[in-house]
Length: 156
Image (cartoon, rainbow, N blue to C red; front, top):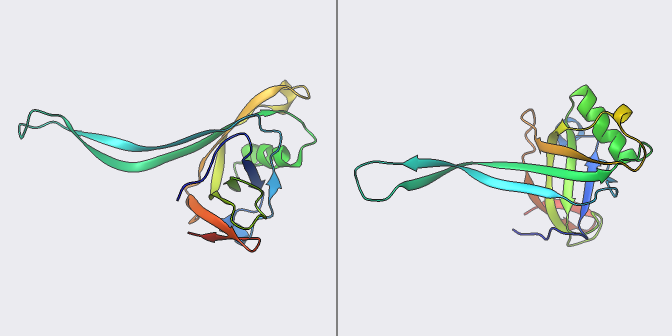
């Protein structure tokens, strides 16, 4: 259930969230400079007299994506992201190790909310800025690991 992150991976957005139509139309965000991906679990400390050690239990996972990008107001992927941020709507994302149409490509897909985006009026073309995405609460499409089979994504 692993996939590669790095310079060659592909990041896609879709204004059509899984929750609304089920089949997103993907647009590559090729202006991304890099990608930050947090995947961690909450922790609970257990401090009792049972032993000499503080013990830990794990809780729910936290996941987020941060994408520093080169701003381009004509980029269709950034237009989708900015509209979702301004209108507080859910969009779909796909973080894939290669093109989303390549058979065997692996990655994560989910519906997200956009929690950080700059005001376009504060930017000039080709400024560097950052978007932040987190899984959306109002959808059943939680982060899902997928493998592309014959041009379509399948859950694995």
